[in-house]
Image (cartoon, rainbow, N blue to C red; front, top):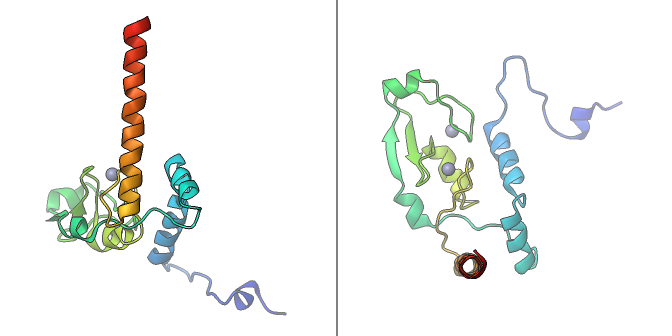
Length: 156
Ligand SMILES: [Zn+2]
Ligand SMILES: [Zn+2]
């Protein structure tokens, strides 16, 4: 009788073998999928066909880069994407929200999703529909705030 692994055409992890990082990344991306209200809303408006678009290529190219220095390496900080500790001389990218990642990890990430894997801070995208959608959300929020202010000035 065939084993589970034969049937599913994959190898069990051997002794001392590390898990596949791309697999971990894929899981993170799946988790990111449609889990926020924001993304549900987006998917509703655009017929559920589309996910949040990748980050703008230009924005990704212009992210701040730095090398891990000995002090940082000694702190044992981990890259949130691959969960490996930062080693001295590793190249990192810093997002506008100040979260930092291995260059190779965050570049792969931002080619799929425009938001920070840690805090979901969104980077600009090259997708005009999505940018328009974001603007509408901001306008809605402002309108709501204006209403609240009006309400407060009348009843406060
Ligand atoms: Zn990493
Ligand atoms: Zn962040």
